[in-house]
Image (tube, rainbow, N blue to C red; front, side):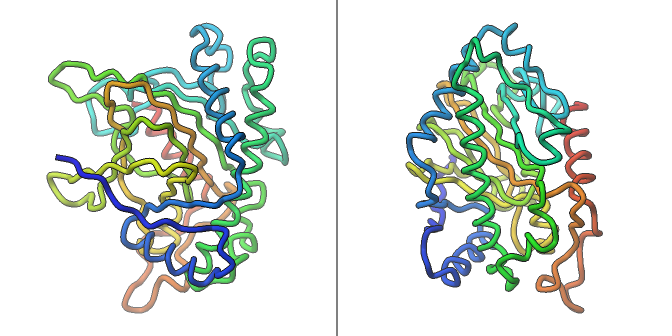
Length: 310
C-alpha cells in the first residue's frame, strides 16, 4: 500500500542563502524532491494559469488540434506519448500543451503554437506572464543549487546554461478514469525528467508518486501531497549527470484516482549548446566521473525521440 512522502520545505525568500543551500543539498541527495515556498509568484497568476489551461482543454478536439505540437511546442493529444518505454500498453492517459519563451533566438526559431485569440483572448498574455515569472524563480533556484554544490552562485550563468535556455512550461490534463482491465492505467508512466530542475504546480487532486530506489524490486511508490501555494521541485537527468549521481533524478509517475486532474510543470532545460560534464566538486580519484560529457540539446533530443517513437 502506497504511503505519503514527507518532503523538506525550502523557503526561497530566506536571506540566509547558505542554510537554504544546505537544506537543498540534503533534499537532493536523499529524495531528489522538495517543496519551494515564498517564491514570489502571485496567487492570482497561478490561479489564472489553471483557469486558462482548463479553458483550452475543454475546447473541441478539432480546435485543439490546430495547435498540434511542432518542434515539441504545442498540443499533444491523449495517448500520444509513453514515458515508460518498457510498457507494451497504449500511451499515457493525458493531454498536454508545451510552450516556451517568446523571446531570444529560440523564441524566433521555435515559435509557440498559440491557440486562437478569438477562442481564448486572455490565454497568450497569461501564459507569457507566467513563463517569465517561473523562469525567474528557476534562475534563483539554480543559484541556490550551485551554492549547494560548493560552487559560485552564478556558476550556471557563467557556463552559459541560462543563456537563452530551452526551458518550457507544460500544461497537463489527466482525465482520471480508472479503466477496469488486466492492464494498469497510467496518467504518466514511470519516468525521470530530462533537464536540470522541474517546478510543478498541481490542483488538489492527488496522483503524483515517487520511487526513491528505482533499483529495488518490487518498487515502492509513495504519494507526494500538494502543498498550497508551493512548488513541488524535483531534480532532472542533466543535473544528476552534472553532479555525478550525487543529486538524484528520481523516478516518478502519476496514477489516475477517478477524478480529472490538472498540473502545470516548468522544465528548466539549459541552452542546447551547454556542455554537461561532471562538476569538479562532485568527482575525485576515488569517485571518477560516471557519465561522459554531452551537449544538453543532444541529450534532450534523444530522450524525446525515444518517448515519441513508441
